[in-house]
Every structure is written in structure tokens, then in C-alpha cells.
Image (cartoon, rainbow, N blue to C red):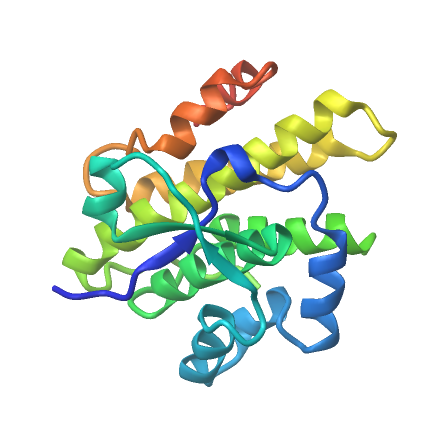
Length: 206
């Protein structure tokens, strides 16, 4: 099975803020609402292409999990790369199944949080071969989102990071159900475990 490479940041390059990128995506109608757009081919092309998101090559060590999951690490506009990676990972899942409402929480939570914004779907089996890979890749993207939120919580800048961490963890836990056997111990997961406060996430079952 051949799938397009998922472009994610190296976990060491996660942005401190995604507000500017989220505003730009929202102005173009490419925020979490795109997950309800029927024309997924257009949406994927807009998010994965280099027109909206500036991407640059980065030098990273070889990683067996990245190779297995079809993940390529890139730099550039870090906030935009981060958000586009999460949204494309969701589109991968939605191509082959109807995600649960809990799984879908993370995308809205990220944009609600960044923009200051204050339909239950049932999971069906879908394509079993692709379901496992898509679940693994979405789990990696959500683990990056958790690392972003855990790092933000440490800064204690007055924003409600606790709610974001909890919501992202719920979606990541739902993504584990889609993984083939167990959640992949990707470089993103390993990075999360090294962060001060990353143990908070472990208590939520991620």
C-alpha cells in the first residue's frame, strides 16, 4: 500500500505559539472546519502543498518508526507545519472511517485555544489495513499537539492550558483504538516523555 508522506515537525522544533498560523488558516477557511468539507482532495492539496505552508528540509537522524509510518520531518513556518500535519492526519483517518466524536475533539480544541473561541459520529471498521496506519499517524500528530500543550502549561502564561492538555489527551486515547496493536513509540512520544510535566499525560492513559 502506497500513501502520501505525512509532513511533521521534528518534536524539538514545536512552536511556542500557533495563534498566527491558526488565524491565517481560519481566514482561508482551512481551520478545523475543513474536516467537514466534502472535497477532501482539494483540502488535502491545499494543506499538504507548499503554497499555504512554507516548508524547508531539516537534518534529522534516521528513525524506523518514521519510515514505517511514512512520516517525513520538515521545518519552515513551524505553526503552519504543525497545524497542517494535524489536519492532514485527520483527513487520512476520515478517508477510510467515520471517527468517533471524542477522536475529533483535538482539531477543534487546538483552533479554539489558538483563536480564543469559546455531532457525535460512530466509528466503523473501514479499511482495516489503512485504519491501523492512519490511526498510528494521527496518534503521532496528536502526541506532537500534546507536547506543544505540555510545554505551554509549563510557561504558566495565564492561558487555560489544562483544558487543552486534557482534551488532546482524550483524542489521543481515542486514536489508540485505531492503532494496529498498540500506540507507536515514535520520536514524538519519546520527546513528550522527556518534557517536564509530560508525566501528567501518562496519568490520562496516553
